[in-house]
Length: 97
Image (tube, rainbow, N blue to C red):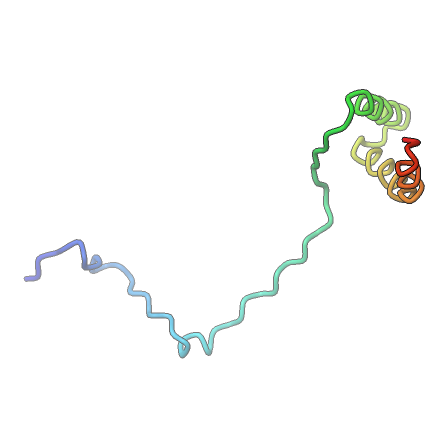
C-alpha cells in the first residue's frame, strides 16, 4: 500500500489534461469582447468654491423647475459649454475670465 503524501492528489480528484498546442487546436475560440456601453461616470475636479456653489444652485433650480434628473441637467449644461469651448478659450487667453 502506498502511503498518502501531500504531493499526490486525492484518488477521487479529476485529472485535468495538460494544455498543449495540440489540445487547443480543436478548441472553440473565445467570444469577442463585449463593446463598452456609453453610460454614466463620475469625475472630480477642483474649482473655486463660489463657482461650485453657483453651479450646484443652477442645477438644483433647473431640476426643481423641470423635474429632469440632475445628471441630465449637468450633461446638458456641460454639452453647451463644450460647444462654446473656443469662445471660452479666447476669453481665458485675453484674461476676461
